[in-house]
Amino acid sequence: MLNLLGGWGLQALTRLGRAHLLLLPLFRGLTEILRRPSLLVDQLYSVGVLTLLIIGVAGLFVGMVLALQGYNVLSRFGGDTALGFMVAASLVRELGPVLTALLFAGRAGSALTAEIGLMKATEQLSGLEMMAVNPECRVLAPRFFAGLLAVPLLAALFSCLGVLGGWMVGGGLLGVDQAAFWNGMQDGIDFNDDIINGVIKSLVFGFVCTWIAIFQGYDCVPTSEGVSRATTRTVVHSSLAVLGLDFVLTALMFG
Amino acid sequence: MNRKRQIEIWVGVFMAIGFAALFLLAMKISNLGTAYSGELFHVTARFDNIGGLKTKAPVTIAGVEVGRVQEIRYDPDDFRAVVVLGIQGQYLGKIPDDSFANILTAGLLGEQYIGIDPGGSEDMLGEGSEISMTQSALVLEKIIGQFIFGKKKGSGTE
Image (tube, rainbow over all chains, first blue to last red; front, top):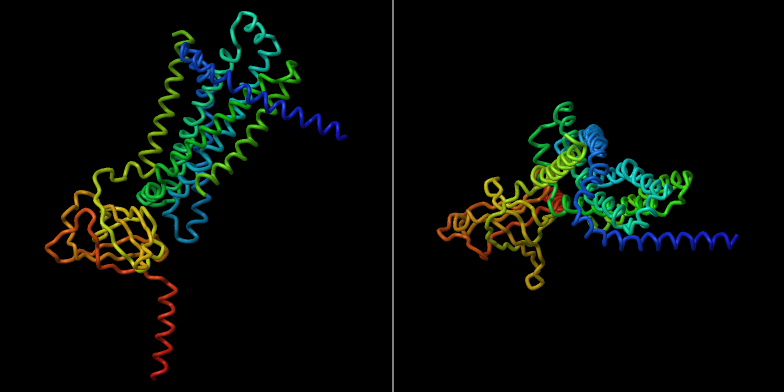
């Protein structure tokens, strides 16, 4: 029993170590990307463009629901003019970065893991190595930087569409004063405190989600079962990491 | 149109939408688009009690915002709060130096802000000058205390 526990702990530590060692060749792959930008463009398509739709729809509906729920509570205290601020603050500070990262892990992270895992299982990665091409620089690094770049942009889009959705429901359906909605928002949201911190958050989430996805794919057992397990692990680990990190980052940023 | 070109166009669209969203967040949703970015000049005012005044609170004249509170600190020498107001440069030399600074509250539960009542002096406020006439924030507990005290005294004389 003790033996099993120790073995499990050692295995977990080895995986953690391997995951961090992987970061070095990933950043070294940056030079390869600068020489061949088309590698990055291809990955931005599969990681960013294909995630656009679900992010947009989710953002719009989250904003609409926030406006509905917020209105019910705020109007009880006669504070429905603060609706714009409430919707925008919760989107920009929390929901935008976090929900984007969770959706990204489910939509793009799992696909990344499956793709890389399958490459490993069909020995394409060893094939590249045989041709003296470093698979970490050539295959993994473009995917990593594409994810790092895509998540902040997707989060910004999520927040924007969320505010739009909140404005449609608040201004159109519930009849909240339009000027109060926008003025309250612009008075309450500070560029440095809220927008920049939100972007920093989503940058961190993008880093962690893509890193986990790539590592799980690269480190999986090269069988069909191993790939399926790695895909599941990607989604679970990414989600937990995002939620945990969100608490830490919020505590640091907003005190 | 071949597949490669299509991908490039879509990625271009994605990047454009993403940066447009960031730009919208900055200009439309945050205070960056409305913030006054030009020259400011600084005026200090000393208050016995600033209540709940915070930095970045608006400074108004006749209800129109002319600046923001930039800094609040405590001066241990005369036991008062020193508030530094950043006022827009276009009002430099246009506010009389015997103006009166009040700490007011927007609505019953709203945020506190500084209202300046212009005086009648010929001399105007400049960079670094001080408003000498100030009125502290109204602290609700004190008012209630005075009210109860006043009532008791009133009933005693009757």
